[in-house]
Amino acid sequence: MSSDMANILLLLVIGAGIAVNEGDASMEALMECKKDYKVSREQIMSGDSSEEVKCFAECLMKKTGGMDEGGNFNTEKIKEEGRKHAKTDDQKRANDAAVDKCISETEAANPTGKCEKGFEFFKCVRGEMKSPM
Image (tube, rainbow, N blue to C red):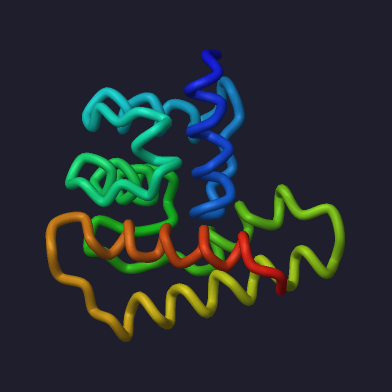
């Protein structure tokens, strides 16, 4: 796996609670979304809000089961994926709290633009994971 792909995977795991391992369905989803939406590591790392980045994030949320095709979040699936990377109970609680907060904030904002909902959630969780909890 290229270092760019590894960095994208890491950011997506942190930013959206998506666990991606080589050879599993999440990796397949990542590759499909990467093929459909040509985004670079730099675009994702910089917080680029282009349509390609937004749609890539939402595509991955949908293909991994974190969001259905109607734009509804699967809270338990997102939490479960985030917990896979938590090493302590405190980290698990922080993950769950971030997911709850970001789903609530995203739903309250009611984003309606193309690929906005998944991307807004992604941005929120990424911000929560960077701040101390």
